[in-house]
Length: 451
Image (cartoon, rainbow, N blue to C red; front, side, top):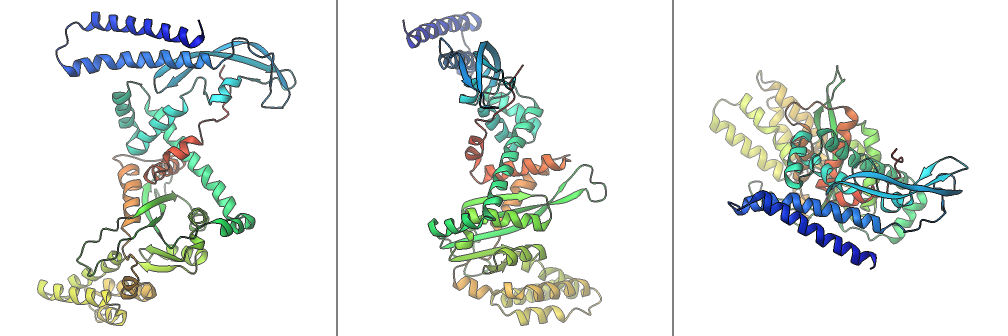
């Protein structure tokens, strides 16, 4: 009888055994839900049986006498079969494989572990990916509870956190590779020769604050967030129309670092999207100086647009402080918004300058004059609309909300800096549809041999 036939026979016998035990234990079911709840543990046991047997089939009955040493390149000699335990998506699985020892460097290895990316004594790559995904979505404690409820596999809060941050660490490794590529003239020239130039690509930058432990003087740090995306949706005809952007192919990236360091990430991620080769490159931002400085440094030919909604936020505070009645306030706000929409920045700035000496509106009006004066070259909204450019930064606002607001700013969360960054990067990868790609990079890690 060959191995497959033997495995099929053993599996059939195991199914009969588990089914008999199930029927004796449960008796007459009271509902379909009860039946489902009782069958799920049985399916998990069957999965463990199959996985363990399948792993056994990967080993030769008679192991080779020698195996190349992965540490020094010499020949390691076969010693014995060594058992190990894995925590997998199907629960704990025990398996046995050939163990070799190198006489030259005294390092041992198991070829099967390296071949399949097995992690003896640790969680499997698939379990890491899925628990990490739940940890990127929810607080770690809630993630562990939800994961166990869905899979029947129990994982600790620490395991979920470690898995999420491992994925975030892998994102960082990938970004480090991208930064090195983006600074390599040969790679850039080859990309310019082979890449298909994007017709119109959008970039956007913003930041949101997160609470960092051990930062006594400045406990709230800026998590800088960037996005690359495309859209074919036309801008609205008037500011009161629907502003849904319908961005597609969104890629988020983020970090807590100085602006100059984030600029390297801006350039590197852009090179992955051929931003430097785009026929039209449009950047959206809220007017923060660090944003436009980085854009000007790395993409000086890009169109720079201040988000319409951030610009209009300066209008109402002046009206409220300077004008007595609501009717006057609303009329003034409408006129300034109209002038801004039409691109008449002289009229907009003049409207604010009227109140720079007003006893109640001076601060808000002066602030507005400075803002619109400094950013007027980024507020040519009629021209942008005529060309079909988006003038709202909703995509990056959504990114900040989903990464920081919904995940990092959960109730009571105070983060270690490194863990915060890694969790944020994991969340960004998930939102960007890159989770499977990042997880695949970790499938064949060379991990220390379990004792």
